[in-house]
Amino acid sequence: MLRRASEMTSRTLSRLSILQHMGLDTFYNRCNFGTRFGQILILSMLLVVGFLPSSILTVQNILKVLASSKVYSDNVWVTQKLTEIGRVVHEIQIERGRSTLFLTVSSGDAGDAWQQLLEQRTSVDSATNQLTQWPDQARLELGTLPDHKVKVEAFRRNVETGSVNYSDTLAFYSNINRVLINWMGNEVNSFATGDAWADLTAFHFLTLAKENMGVERARGSAFWNAGYFSKREFIDFFECQTRGNGFLKEAVLFSNVLNTEMSSRAATILENAIQYRRNLILLNDASPSVDNASQWFSYMTLYIDLMDKAQNKLADEIFQRTMSTGDRADSDMMITCFLLVIELAIYPLFVYLSVRLVTRIKTIGSSLASKSRHLFKEQRRNTEMVSQMYPKSIALKLLSGENIEPEIFEQATVCFSVLTDFDDIINVLSAEEAITVLNRVLEIMEDEILKYDVFKVETREDMVLLASGVPRRTPRNCEEIADLCLSLRTRMRSVCLGLLPSRGVRIKSGFCTGSVAAGIVGVKMPRYLLFGDTVNTAARMQSTSNAIGIQVAPSSGEILSDLGVYKLEQRDLVQIKGKGEMYTYWLMDKRIPHGRSPVLSAELY
Image 1 (cartoon, rainbow, N blue to C red):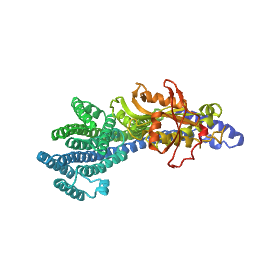
Image 2 (cartoon, one colour):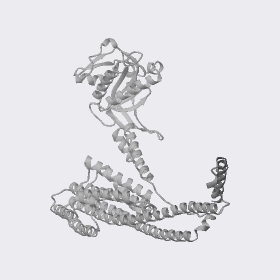
Image 3 (cartoon, rainbow, N blue to C red):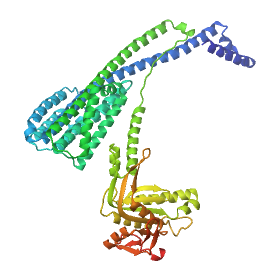
Image 4 (spheres, one colour):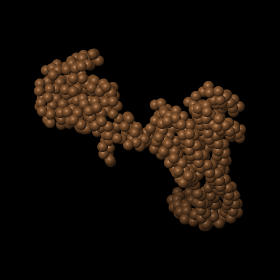
C-alpha cells in the first residue's frame, strides 16, 4: 500500500510540475501529501482501496459459503432419494428373478419358488411404500404411484396364472428399473457436485451393474431349466454379462469403498463360482436341471446382495461426507462473519498489514465422465477392429476369451487376386493420384466382398487372399468366389488411371477348391491364416494367370462346369511349379445376367 501511495504521489508531483508551467497547479497543491488535506485525501484513498478488495473477498466468501450450503442440501436430498430408489430397484430385481424362476421350473418344484416369490413381493411393496417421493420421470412413463401399484398387481396375477412367459416378465420389471435408474443418472448429473460427485456416480454405475446382473441371473436360470439358449437368448445373455461387468469395473474405479468391498475374499469366491457357471452357459449345451437353476440363482443372488451391501456402505459414506460438508459450511460462515467483524473493528491496521485469505476449493469436473465415455468408445472401436480382422465367429470367440483350435475344412475355395497395374500406379502416378486410385480399388474390393459369403483373409501390397467356406462352411463356396472374381474384374475397369484413362485397373485372379487347414497363428500379432495344398495351388493359379484373367484350378473348374451357368474355357497344359503340367480353365463369364458388362473376348487371354 505504501509503495502504491508513493507511486501515486510521484505521478501527482510529475503532473504538478507540468501544470505549474500552465498555471493549473492550485488543485494539485491542495492534494499534496505535505498538506493536511492531501494527507486526508490520500489516506482516504488508501483506506478505500484497501477496503474494497477485502470487502469483495468477504462477500465472495459469503456467497461461496451459501453455495456450499446449497450443495450440501442438494447432496443430502439426492443421497436420500438415490438410496430409496436404489432399494426399490434392488427389491424389484430380486422379484424379477424369483418370478422368472417360478415360470421356468417344473410344476413339481414350483412350491418353494412360489413361497419365495410371495415373500419377495412383500419386500418390494415395503420398499415402494417407504418412498418419500415418486420421481417425475416415473410419473410420466409409469403413471402415478397408485396407478403403478395397480399395474404391478395385475402383472403379478398374470404370473400366477402363467399367462405370461419369462421373457414378458423380464421386459416388464426391466422397464420399471430402466425408468428409475435413468432418473438416478439424471439426478446425479444435475445435482451432485463437489466431493460427493464421484461417489454418487459410483452409486449409479453400481446400480446399473446390479440391474444387468439381475437380468443375467434370470436368463441364466431359464437356461439351466431348459438346458439351452436360442441364438437371440444367447446374445442377450452375453450382452447383459458384458454390460454388468463393465459397469461394475467403472463403479470400482470411482469409489475406494466399493473397491475394498468387491475385492474381499467372499466376493472373489463368488466371482469364481459364477464365472465357472458362466463358462458352462456359454457352451450352450447342458442338461435341464432345477438344482442347477436354483444353484445359479443362489450364487448370483449372493453376489448381488454383496454388491447391495457395498452400495449401502457407499451410501453411508456419502451421507457422512455430506454432513461433514454441511458442518464445514457452517463453520466457514461463522469464521467469515467473525473475520468481517474484526476487519471492520480494526480496519485502519490493514493499511500496514497484509491480510491473506486462504480458501480451499475442491472441484471435480466432468472430465471423468468424458474419459469414461471415451473408454466405452475405445472398447467399441477395438471390438469393431477385431471383427474386421477376423471372421465374425472367430472374433466372437476371441472377444469372449475362448481358445481358437485349428480346423480342417474338407471343401473350401481359396482365391488370390493381384493388381496387374500396381507397379504402374506406384511408379508412374503421382503420390496423390496413386493414393486416390488405391483407395478407390480397396473401396471397391470391400464393397464387393460384402455382397458374397467370402472372407478376406489377408491383404498384402498388391495382393489379396480371399476364401469362401472358411470358417463358415457353405456348399456354394466355389460359386461365391467365382461371382466375386467376375464382379471385381468388371468393377475395376471403371477405375480411371491417369496414364491409361480408357483401360481402367486390371486385376488377375486364380482360385482352387479343396481342403484347407485354418487357425490363429502368432502371439504379439495373431492372424487367421489358411494352410494346405489348396492354398498353394490357388497361388499358382494367380501367378500363371494373365493380366485380367481368372484362372481356375481343375477342382474348381469341374464344380463350375457341373453347375452349367458359368462360361469356362479350357486352357492348354500349363507348367505349374511343384505340380507339373496341369489343365486349367479360364473363367469367362456367368451366363445368367447379373448387371455386368458383356462377356470378355477370349483374345484378352
